[in-house]
Image (cartoon, rainbow, N blue to C red):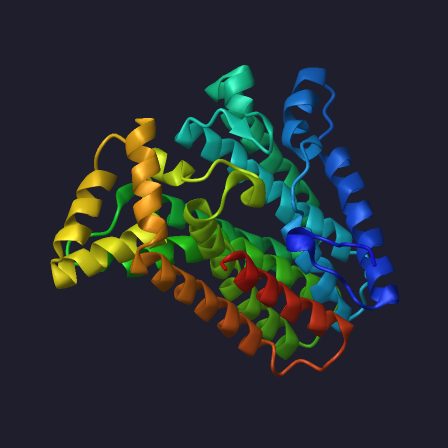
Length: 336
Protein backbone atom coordinates (compact mmCIF):
# COMPACT_ATOMS: atom_id res chain seq x y z
CA UNK A 1 0.00 0.00 0.00
CA UNK A 2 1.43 3.36 -1.02
CA UNK A 3 1.82 5.99 1.65
CA UNK A 4 0.19 9.28 0.71
CA UNK A 5 0.68 12.67 2.27
CA UNK A 6 1.56 13.63 5.83
CA UNK A 7 1.81 11.45 8.93
CA UNK A 8 2.09 8.28 6.81
CA UNK A 9 -1.57 8.48 5.83
CA UNK A 10 -2.52 5.36 3.90
CA UNK A 11 -5.34 5.59 1.39
CA UNK A 12 -7.02 2.20 1.51
CA UNK A 13 -8.88 2.42 -1.79
CA UNK A 14 -6.64 1.72 -4.78
CA UNK A 15 -8.54 3.95 -7.19
CA UNK A 16 -8.54 6.85 -4.75
CA UNK A 17 -4.88 6.26 -3.97
CA UNK A 18 -3.95 6.41 -7.65
CA UNK A 19 -5.99 9.56 -8.23
CA UNK A 20 -4.57 11.32 -5.18
CA UNK A 21 -1.03 10.45 -6.16
CA UNK A 22 -1.65 11.68 -9.72
CA UNK A 23 -3.13 14.89 -8.37
CA UNK A 24 -0.20 15.52 -6.04
CA UNK A 25 2.24 14.87 -8.89
CA UNK A 26 0.38 17.44 -10.99
CA UNK A 27 0.54 19.90 -8.09
CA UNK A 28 4.29 19.40 -7.83
CA UNK A 29 4.67 20.17 -11.52
CA UNK A 30 2.43 23.21 -11.09
CA UNK A 31 4.54 24.49 -8.20
CA UNK A 32 7.72 24.28 -10.25
CA UNK A 33 6.05 26.01 -13.18
CA UNK A 34 4.59 28.76 -10.98
CA UNK A 35 7.97 29.51 -9.41
CA UNK A 36 9.84 30.01 -12.68
CA UNK A 37 11.02 33.47 -13.61
CA UNK A 38 12.86 34.99 -16.51
CA UNK A 39 15.46 35.96 -13.91
CA UNK A 40 17.42 32.80 -12.96
CA UNK A 41 18.20 34.06 -9.45
CA UNK A 42 14.49 34.59 -8.71
CA UNK A 43 13.75 31.07 -9.94
CA UNK A 44 16.45 29.68 -7.66
CA UNK A 45 15.16 31.55 -4.61
CA UNK A 46 11.48 30.85 -5.34
CA UNK A 47 12.09 27.12 -5.88
CA UNK A 48 14.34 26.82 -2.83
CA UNK A 49 11.63 25.54 -0.49
CA UNK A 50 9.61 23.82 -3.22
CA UNK A 51 12.57 21.56 -3.96
CA UNK A 52 13.25 21.03 -0.25
CA UNK A 53 10.02 19.02 -0.11
CA UNK A 54 7.40 19.05 2.62
CA UNK A 55 4.25 17.23 3.62
CA UNK A 56 2.03 18.85 0.96
CA UNK A 57 -0.68 18.59 3.61
CA UNK A 58 -2.84 21.33 2.08
CA UNK A 59 -2.78 19.98 -1.50
CA UNK A 60 -3.68 16.54 -0.13
CA UNK A 61 -6.76 18.05 1.52
CA UNK A 62 -7.70 19.75 -1.75
CA UNK A 63 -7.53 16.38 -3.54
CA UNK A 64 -9.55 14.52 -0.91
CA UNK A 65 -12.19 17.25 -0.65
CA UNK A 66 -12.61 17.27 -4.43
CA UNK A 67 -13.80 13.65 -4.24
CA UNK A 68 -17.21 14.94 -3.10
CA UNK A 69 -17.76 16.44 -6.56
CA UNK A 70 -15.87 16.01 -9.82
CA UNK A 71 -12.26 15.41 -8.74
CA UNK A 72 -11.04 15.92 -12.31
CA UNK A 73 -12.55 19.40 -12.66
CA UNK A 74 -10.02 21.83 -14.17
CA UNK A 75 -9.78 24.11 -11.13
CA UNK A 76 -8.82 21.42 -8.58
CA UNK A 77 -5.06 21.16 -9.22
CA UNK A 78 -4.53 24.94 -9.73
CA UNK A 79 -6.32 25.67 -6.45
CA UNK A 80 -4.03 23.19 -4.69
CA UNK A 81 -1.04 24.99 -6.19
CA UNK A 82 -2.45 28.29 -4.87
CA UNK A 83 -2.77 27.10 -1.26
CA UNK A 84 0.69 25.54 -1.26
CA UNK A 85 2.28 28.65 -2.81
CA UNK A 86 0.58 30.75 -0.14
CA UNK A 87 1.83 28.43 2.59
CA UNK A 88 5.37 28.49 1.19
CA UNK A 89 5.30 32.29 1.00
CA UNK A 90 4.41 32.51 4.68
CA UNK A 91 7.36 30.25 5.51
CA UNK A 92 9.79 32.66 3.84
CA UNK A 93 8.34 35.50 5.91
CA UNK A 94 8.17 33.44 9.12
CA UNK A 95 11.84 32.53 8.85
CA UNK A 96 12.76 36.21 8.62
CA UNK A 97 10.67 37.09 11.68
CA UNK A 98 12.00 34.10 13.63
CA UNK A 99 15.59 34.56 12.39
CA UNK A 100 15.51 30.87 11.48
CA UNK A 101 18.62 29.36 9.93
CA UNK A 102 17.19 26.04 8.72
CA UNK A 103 13.92 25.09 7.04
CA UNK A 104 13.05 21.57 5.86
CA UNK A 105 16.60 20.40 6.35
CA UNK A 106 18.20 23.08 4.19
CA UNK A 107 19.48 26.59 4.88
CA UNK A 108 16.58 29.04 5.12
CA UNK A 109 16.33 31.65 2.37
CA UNK A 110 17.17 34.44 4.81
CA UNK A 111 20.26 32.58 6.03
CA UNK A 112 21.40 31.96 2.46
CA UNK A 113 20.55 35.26 0.75
CA UNK A 114 19.56 37.69 3.52
CA UNK A 115 16.28 39.02 4.87
CA UNK A 116 15.46 41.31 1.95
CA UNK A 117 15.65 38.54 -0.63
CA UNK A 118 13.62 36.19 1.59
CA UNK A 119 10.83 38.74 2.12
CA UNK A 120 10.70 39.66 -1.56
CA UNK A 121 10.69 35.99 -2.58
CA UNK A 122 7.71 35.42 -0.33
CA UNK A 123 6.02 38.38 -2.01
CA UNK A 124 6.84 36.87 -5.41
CA UNK A 125 5.11 33.63 -4.42
CA UNK A 126 2.03 35.53 -3.23
CA UNK A 127 1.96 37.31 -6.60
CA UNK A 128 2.15 34.04 -8.51
CA UNK A 129 -0.63 32.56 -6.36
CA UNK A 130 -2.79 35.60 -7.14
CA UNK A 131 -2.12 35.20 -10.85
CA UNK A 132 -3.41 31.60 -10.77
CA UNK A 133 -6.37 32.65 -8.63
CA UNK A 134 -7.47 35.19 -11.21
CA UNK A 135 -8.22 32.33 -13.60
CA UNK A 136 -10.31 30.51 -10.98
CA UNK A 137 -12.95 33.20 -10.71
CA UNK A 138 -13.98 36.05 -8.38
CA UNK A 139 -15.37 33.73 -5.68
CA UNK A 140 -12.02 31.97 -5.38
CA UNK A 141 -10.26 35.34 -5.15
CA UNK A 142 -12.64 36.44 -2.38
CA UNK A 143 -12.20 33.21 -0.39
CA UNK A 144 -8.42 33.43 -0.63
CA UNK A 145 -8.40 37.12 0.30
CA UNK A 146 -10.48 36.49 3.42
CA UNK A 147 -8.24 33.60 4.45
CA UNK A 148 -5.11 35.66 3.87
CA UNK A 149 -6.51 38.46 6.00
CA UNK A 150 -7.14 35.96 8.80
CA UNK A 151 -3.66 34.51 8.40
CA UNK A 152 -2.00 37.92 8.68
CA UNK A 153 -4.28 38.92 11.56
CA UNK A 154 -3.24 35.76 13.41
CA UNK A 155 0.41 36.61 12.90
CA UNK A 156 -0.12 40.17 14.15
CA UNK A 157 -2.02 38.92 17.21
CA UNK A 158 0.81 36.51 17.98
CA UNK A 159 3.34 39.31 17.73
CA UNK A 160 1.26 41.71 19.86
CA UNK A 161 0.32 39.16 22.52
CA UNK A 162 -2.95 38.99 24.46
CA UNK A 163 -4.57 42.22 25.57
CA UNK A 164 -4.90 42.91 29.29
CA UNK A 165 -7.53 40.66 30.82
CA UNK A 166 -7.59 38.26 27.84
CA UNK A 167 -7.06 34.61 28.65
CA UNK A 168 -3.66 33.65 27.11
CA UNK A 169 -4.90 30.19 26.07
CA UNK A 170 -7.94 31.63 24.28
CA UNK A 171 -5.68 34.19 22.62
CA UNK A 172 -3.28 31.49 21.49
CA UNK A 173 -6.06 29.33 20.03
CA UNK A 174 -7.35 32.39 18.13
CA UNK A 175 -3.83 32.92 16.77
CA UNK A 176 -3.67 29.32 15.56
CA UNK A 177 -7.11 29.60 13.98
CA UNK A 178 -5.80 32.49 11.91
CA UNK A 179 -2.24 31.39 11.22
CA UNK A 180 -2.92 27.70 10.51
CA UNK A 181 -6.63 26.92 10.55
CA UNK A 182 -7.57 29.50 7.93
CA UNK A 183 -5.43 28.13 5.10
CA UNK A 184 -6.17 24.48 5.93
CA UNK A 185 -9.89 25.36 5.85
CA UNK A 186 -9.43 27.03 2.46
CA UNK A 187 -7.69 23.92 1.16
CA UNK A 188 -10.80 21.87 1.92
CA UNK A 189 -13.07 24.63 0.66
CA UNK A 190 -11.24 24.97 -2.65
CA UNK A 191 -11.26 21.23 -3.27
CA UNK A 192 -15.00 21.04 -2.73
CA UNK A 193 -15.74 24.31 -4.56
CA UNK A 194 -13.66 23.53 -7.62
CA UNK A 195 -15.18 20.06 -7.89
CA UNK A 196 -18.68 21.52 -7.96
CA UNK A 197 -19.74 19.89 -4.69
CA UNK A 198 -22.98 20.99 -3.05
CA UNK A 199 -22.69 24.15 -0.93
CA UNK A 200 -23.59 22.23 2.24
CA UNK A 201 -20.67 19.87 1.53
CA UNK A 202 -18.38 22.86 0.97
CA UNK A 203 -19.39 24.25 4.37
CA UNK A 204 -18.90 20.91 6.14
CA UNK A 205 -15.42 20.46 4.71
CA UNK A 206 -14.46 24.06 5.55
CA UNK A 207 -15.44 23.51 9.20
CA UNK A 208 -13.49 20.25 9.20
CA UNK A 209 -10.38 21.94 7.81
CA UNK A 210 -10.48 24.75 10.35
CA UNK A 211 -10.50 22.32 13.28
CA UNK A 212 -8.00 19.94 11.74
CA UNK A 213 -5.59 22.81 11.09
CA UNK A 214 -5.61 23.84 14.74
CA UNK A 215 -5.26 20.22 15.88
CA UNK A 216 -2.33 19.80 13.50
CA UNK A 217 -0.48 22.75 15.06
CA UNK A 218 -1.32 21.71 18.62
CA UNK A 219 0.11 18.27 17.89
CA UNK A 220 3.32 20.01 16.81
CA UNK A 221 3.34 21.88 20.12
CA UNK A 222 3.10 18.60 22.02
CA UNK A 223 5.73 16.94 19.83
CA UNK A 224 8.16 19.81 20.39
CA UNK A 225 8.15 18.90 24.09
CA UNK A 226 7.42 15.18 24.16
CA UNK A 227 9.31 13.61 21.28
CA UNK A 228 12.94 12.84 20.65
CA UNK A 229 14.62 14.07 17.49
CA UNK A 230 14.38 10.65 15.81
CA UNK A 231 10.61 10.59 16.22
CA UNK A 232 9.80 14.19 15.25
CA UNK A 233 12.56 14.85 12.73
CA UNK A 234 13.58 18.05 14.51
CA UNK A 235 15.41 19.07 17.66
CA UNK A 236 13.14 18.77 20.72
CA UNK A 237 12.37 21.92 22.65
CA UNK A 238 13.08 24.28 19.76
CA UNK A 239 10.18 26.55 20.74
CA UNK A 240 11.32 26.50 24.39
CA UNK A 241 14.84 27.52 23.46
CA UNK A 242 13.48 30.40 21.38
CA UNK A 243 11.19 31.56 24.18
CA UNK A 244 7.98 30.77 22.27
CA UNK A 245 5.12 29.97 24.65
CA UNK A 246 3.17 27.15 23.00
CA UNK A 247 0.17 25.41 24.53
CA UNK A 248 1.98 23.16 27.07
CA UNK A 249 3.74 26.22 28.51
CA UNK A 250 0.52 28.24 28.56
CA UNK A 251 -1.28 25.41 30.34
CA UNK A 252 1.54 25.29 32.90
CA UNK A 253 1.29 29.03 33.55
CA UNK A 254 -2.49 28.78 33.83
CA UNK A 255 -2.15 26.02 36.44
CA UNK A 256 0.55 27.92 38.33
CA UNK A 257 -1.65 31.02 38.54
CA UNK A 258 -4.65 28.97 39.66
CA UNK A 259 -3.03 26.65 42.23
CA UNK A 260 0.12 28.52 43.23
CA UNK A 261 2.11 25.30 43.73
CA UNK A 262 5.79 25.88 44.45
CA UNK A 263 6.99 23.37 41.84
CA UNK A 264 4.82 24.96 39.13
CA UNK A 265 6.05 28.45 39.98
CA UNK A 266 9.66 27.21 39.97
CA UNK A 267 9.21 25.65 36.53
CA UNK A 268 7.67 28.88 35.20
CA UNK A 269 10.69 30.75 36.52
CA UNK A 270 13.00 28.28 34.79
CA UNK A 271 11.13 28.71 31.50
CA UNK A 272 11.48 32.48 31.79
CA UNK A 273 15.27 32.16 32.15
CA UNK A 274 17.86 31.90 29.39
CA UNK A 275 17.16 28.52 27.82
CA UNK A 276 19.94 28.84 25.28
CA UNK A 277 21.94 27.30 28.14
CA UNK A 278 21.94 23.56 27.35
CA UNK A 279 21.70 22.41 30.97
CA UNK A 280 18.73 24.66 31.77
CA UNK A 281 17.07 23.71 28.49
CA UNK A 282 17.44 19.97 29.22
CA UNK A 283 16.05 20.42 32.73
CA UNK A 284 13.07 22.41 31.46
CA UNK A 285 12.30 19.70 28.90
CA UNK A 286 12.58 16.95 31.51
CA UNK A 287 10.22 18.71 33.91
CA UNK A 288 7.68 19.66 31.27
CA UNK A 289 7.54 16.11 29.92
CA UNK A 290 6.50 14.89 33.38
CA UNK A 291 4.11 17.76 34.07
CA UNK A 292 0.28 17.54 33.93
CA UNK A 293 0.29 20.58 31.60
CA UNK A 294 1.58 18.38 28.78
CA UNK A 295 -1.30 15.98 29.33
CA UNK A 296 -3.75 18.88 29.20
CA UNK A 297 -2.23 20.06 25.91
CA UNK A 298 -2.65 16.52 24.55
CA UNK A 299 -6.32 16.55 25.56
CA UNK A 300 -6.78 19.92 23.86
CA UNK A 301 -5.27 18.46 20.68
CA UNK A 302 -7.54 15.43 20.82
CA UNK A 303 -10.55 17.69 21.36
CA UNK A 304 -9.89 19.65 18.17
CA UNK A 305 -9.23 16.45 16.22
CA UNK A 306 -12.48 14.95 17.49
CA UNK A 307 -14.35 18.13 16.54
CA UNK A 308 -12.89 17.81 13.05
CA UNK A 309 -14.02 14.20 12.87
CA UNK A 310 -17.51 15.10 14.12
CA UNK A 311 -17.82 17.82 11.48
CA UNK A 312 -17.58 15.12 8.79
CA UNK A 313 -20.70 13.30 10.01
CA UNK A 314 -23.09 14.75 7.37
CA UNK A 315 -20.89 13.56 4.48
CA UNK A 316 -21.66 10.30 2.69
CA UNK A 317 -19.50 7.35 3.67
CA UNK A 318 -16.79 6.34 1.23
CA UNK A 319 -13.03 6.15 0.73
CA UNK A 320 -12.50 9.95 0.75
CA UNK A 321 -14.40 10.41 4.00
CA UNK A 322 -12.47 7.51 5.53
CA UNK A 323 -9.18 9.14 4.53
CA UNK A 324 -10.25 12.44 6.12
CA UNK A 325 -11.21 10.61 9.30
CA UNK A 326 -7.83 8.86 9.28
CA UNK A 327 -6.14 12.26 9.20
CA UNK A 328 -7.89 13.06 12.49
CA UNK A 329 -6.63 9.77 13.92
CA UNK A 330 -3.12 10.55 12.68
CA UNK A 331 -3.09 13.92 14.44
CA UNK A 332 -4.17 12.26 17.70
CA UNK A 333 -1.50 9.59 17.26
CA UNK A 334 1.19 12.25 16.73
CA UNK A 335 0.17 13.93 19.97
CA UNK A 336 0.54 10.64 21.83
